[in-house]
Amino acid sequence: MPEYSNFETKAIRHQAERSHNREHSVPIYATSSFVFEDAEEARAMFAEEIPGNIYSRYSNPNNDEFIEKLCLLEHTEDGIATASGMAAMFCSIAAFVGQGDHIVASRSLFGSTHQILTSLMPKWGVSHTYVSIDNLEEWENAIQPNTKLMFLETPSNPAQDLADLEALGKLAAKHNIILSVDNCFATPYIQNPADFGAHIITHSATKFIDGQGRVLGGAVLGTTDLIKEVRFLARHSGPSMSPFHGWILSKSLETMAVRMDRHCDNAMELATELEKIDDVAWVKYPHLASHPQYELAKKQMKKGGGLVTFELKGGVERGRKFLDALQMVSLSANLGDSRSIATHPASTTHSKLLEEERLAVGISNGLIRVSAGLEHIEDIKKDIFRAIEVSA
Ligand SMILES: *Cc1c(COP(=O)(O)O)cnc(C)c1O
Image (tube, rainbow, N blue to C red):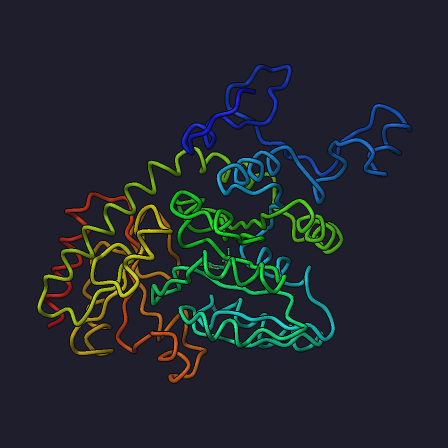
């Protein structure tokens, strides 16, 4: 296969080898196991002397195609596919820490990732320190001799604060610590943390990678050495992706560039227009000049992403009235769907945090997060602006 340098072409043309049926579109390999030519081949494959599929908990052509392609798009050497984003988060953390180790993490994490660090890891003797995503000094001061991992998501959800990937990549290298980045919000189309020194990249493929709200999936990507450890953990603990989901997600990557362009253009226009409305207290979007880290956003993110965060004057009450007044935009906790979605994080996705913990990560009580879908922008704006008006 020739090598292509452009995202779109890699995402479309990297395919599993064609079978004797000469299919153009790769079929689904719904099989739990694979057969060996003879006893010697079976022995050699188990001994990892030769490559090949043995059992779908280890590898499967659909999942391999998905993950190889994602590696090309994320500029990483190797990776594994997992059943969900959380399986990816768990494996990417558990593979590198043990009794007595320490993790430094951004305080603004996805709810279940936060639970892994605060409720599960301490059971195995692993401690953590939370720091502000955008405060480099706090990151450095939190590092201890037993720190094995630095973990973050950028932009943060839903506050849209950014981590300086280049600075943190240098910090991780200086202290010989693994830098792990959940790149689910930005996607590989917009931001490649590996280019800035991140060693491990994780994804919830459930979001923009699938892009149509159909399946759960996840991925852990990184250097060959590190993925070897993650693969060992996954192979023996079993959070494997279903071949059907691998097939769906590999097809999804084929359209990622065109979808992300539209998500980002719709989000950018929505954010720009929301800023002009008197009843909107504030809007946060990485590529708006009003974002406090606008320069950094321009440097490390090709586009602003598909999410817009804002607050209406009138706080929680007004926010809830607004959500109830929406006629097209869905009320859902998901994001990265072809359908636009509005969420009130304080009463849903982040309701388990104390109010002071929420405020510390920029989630005010009236904050609303919109995942801009692929509908026509005029219809998205019409629904949102009408709901703002009638909720006044
Ligand atoms: C959704 C999400 C996850 C978890 O992924 P699942 O596929 O739901 O398990 C992790 N991190 C971020 C940033 C997410 O948005």
